[in-house]
Length: 348
Ligand code: ADP
Ligand code: MG
Image (tube, rainbow, N blue to C red; front, side):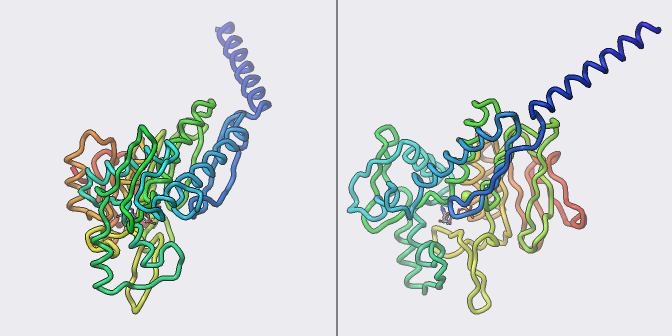
């Protein structure tokens, strides 16, 4: 019995030494952290691991590169050229061409709820400049006639695309999600096993879990207030939220937001405060949160049931504050303190 105790003590001492030496190299020490402004929003990156700082610096480079490549406002970008050209083929960065291709496919499967060519309407409402205005009914009809993702031609292999003159597109609804996917892969290739990337406007990419092995706990914003109404636990997972509260203006007592219904060119109103999508794919989170916000809860839930091949789950927060979530999130979702009385429905 005495021998066992000695062995246990020795083991303990070794573990202690190991833990000390690991602390010495900075493992599980303070993470590398930064905040940057990119893609028209504030992003916060937290990267753990002993090479966290270098990995984070390279992540920041990737974000700026993607921002330039995917921007609709940078006059050097292919998207800008498409929007301001004569309807001819435009060479694109392969990354931008493949994202455009995938955004068009998401447009197709969401029945046009996600439509990258909503951009002319987004501009007319003033969401790109902050000089807001409410277009009249005739203008909205004309704008809606020019929203049609199927008019965009993309040759992903040849890295080029063509857009009819007079139309414009932007990748704002999917850019942050795709960037999150790229960053997660890049960080993992660099040996990072724990990072939390907040890419702004509620686009989250979680690499692994927390350094202690537990899941990241991400707050879900209350669309009608300042607080967090729920917590979602994530590991190696992305989460994206689209909501009317993220970018909006008020005019004559009415609130207008930046997610437009391609059928009307006006803000999508389906009784939802926000839609959150959780998926291993950041692109799906970003694209589908926008699309499902346009579709509304009934069509959105049916879309979720009809597409078991797409790995995603959804949280709908209704305008009345109640919540509905799809079955895959039952374990990961919990109401935050102070919000326990919210009605929660499980969708199956
Ligand atoms: P955020 O910019 O708040 O992260 P989203 O990912 O929901 O928001 O994307 C919204 C952006 O996408 C808008 O700023 C606009 O440029 C564009 N957009 C608006 N409505 C649509 C739509 N129905 N389909 C595709 N893009 C849209
Ligand atoms: Mg989106």
